[in-house]
Length: 130
Image 1: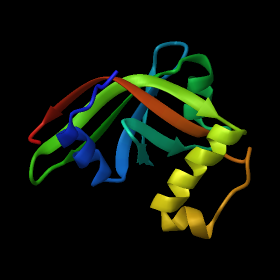
Image 2: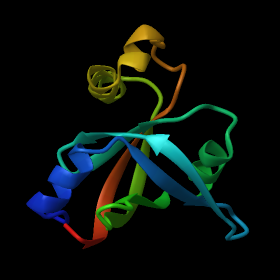
Image 3: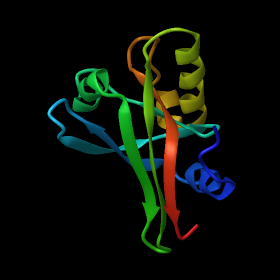
Image 4: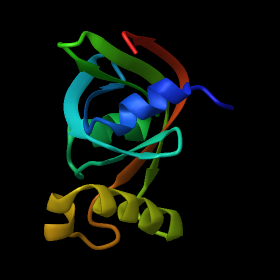
């Protein structure tokens, strides 16, 4: 199912920082800045074990994120489901996407199973100024 327009994908590919929201079991939102890469329409994010994000995602895979700019005023909000990978072929494929995009990951690589990788599959988007 295609959710994002070509303009939205271009906008997302031209940025690397988003505000990523998860929710706890008591329905408390948790928002943090994270860097991301694109895999088609999907958003790829590395997180750490022991974080609030990790704990929230173990209980609830529904997420939201925002990428925006102030000047010009433009942005995109998306909602979707988050898949978490810790090992395996898909994990290694997603790690390569992150390593290809970010020099600091290449300079400080991690091995399989050292950092969960998230794949956010969008189900809804809203954009402005694109």
